[in-house]
Image (cartoon, rainbow, N blue to C red; front, side, top):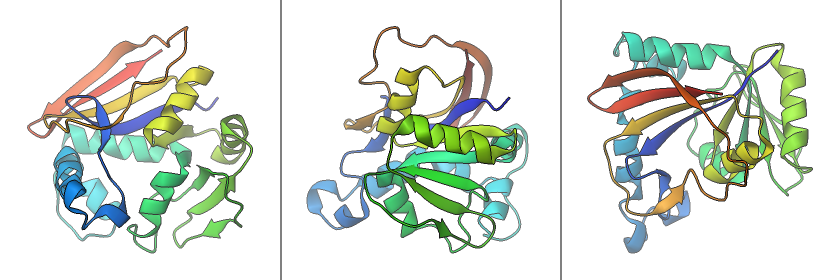
Length: 211
């Protein structure tokens, strides 16, 4: 049976994304540093061997437990779910061969035909809610796990549905001071997790929580 899990980066003060994180805000003075903040939070992933291989950045990169963890996360994923905001930012920044290599279900009110990319990624645009997206993801995952990729609002919706079984959080030692928090808008009963694994390197502490 497929498990439903979250895999994200998080700032030390609890934000998934800094204030104003959007491509259209790249040159706006009040949000000029969002790229640097996000880059600092995700710096741990950029040097991993498996990440470099997956995005075809060339040979090299760090090996070891964190690289193995990231490889496991990607290889266990049979389908992903994300929100429209995350998709729109990725649409203009992912390489032609998007890094998922599975079906990806995008929660949106926009009607759009499926968008197939080289390498096995196809984006499907779901207009009838998170439950429908999860049902479709389970059907396409072939017994592999379902990754809830983000953003924060989408993860909160699935936490409130009580379906998330694991949280994988890369907690980076950076402060945003504002932005989109992960743990907001949660309804009672709040899901309870226990620590399953902790790994760390100088750039992040990698925490896995399970139900």
